[in-house]
Length: 325
Ligand SMILES: Nc1nc2c(ncn2[C@@H]2O[C@H](COP(=O)(O)OP(=O)(O)OP(=O)(O)O)[C@@H](O)[C@H]2O)c(=O)[nH]1
Ligand SMILES: [Mg+2]
Image 1 (cartoon, rainbow, N blue to C red):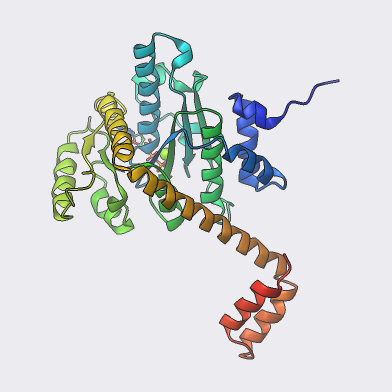
Image 2 (cartoon, rainbow, N blue to C red; image 1 turned 90 degrees about the vertical axis):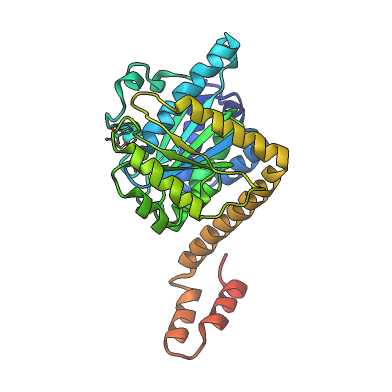
């Protein structure tokens, strides 16, 4: 007989298979996973969570991968011991999913791939078919990694759409990536994501047109009239291909983390994140409750509202009060 081990114990012990399974269950919104996630939640709150967002193709995945590799080698240098490496988690909401397939990285990174590194856990989540539960599932995945002892967790999302911006905002430090030659400056402003940046990155700085983007971004940020009592988001040039600026960016992430802790701003962020997570979960629950009632109790309400026999507000209240749970 094979002994069944407790998935919670396995996750807390950092076993990757158990972690992967739990994330899949969160993605599928499996019955019964909620109790397990609830049990894990008590063990979260130790990781530093970094949101990475920006236009499609701006180099987010390449950047995160380079950061993960740099963070791993950095702690290796400091500690001279394999056991004390910083563990890195990556959750990518990645429409083109280069983490699982595409050959996109510079040679330097490909040679020494983090995919074979036990201390790095990478998970891509599909946007397709997530039915609004994407943000909730992605943040559940971050919880699983946090509980499993991952110290630094990156969460990559394209900065398009409210759900994706909300995911990035649920991080402690938010990186907004702009790439040269994409008209990214205009795109990011349109999506309203420049203002959520704690750190700006201009990616692909091995390219000759990178300086133009850096200057454009800097002058745009001057116009934003910064409040000098607050954190001043730096503009960091990086190249995932050459590795330039990657260690400096890690340094800025660390500086931001320290700033959050020293000023007490971390507490505010935690409160904001908690609020947004309750709201996301409640939204999802409300939607699935509506779906459950769609052909039953709600059908009567829908018909009455359509025929102007009841107003939508009264129907919503009635649904809340009397709908099947
Ligand atoms: N020259 C250069 N190209 C880069 C660099 N980083 C990424 N790229 C290229 O930019 C393209 C997109 O890179 P990704 O890392 O997949 O970008 P992404 O933002 O994750 O893309 P999506 O997840 O699809 O939005 C690929 O063709 C990469 O090879 C870099 O540092 N220098
Ligand atoms: Mg990507």
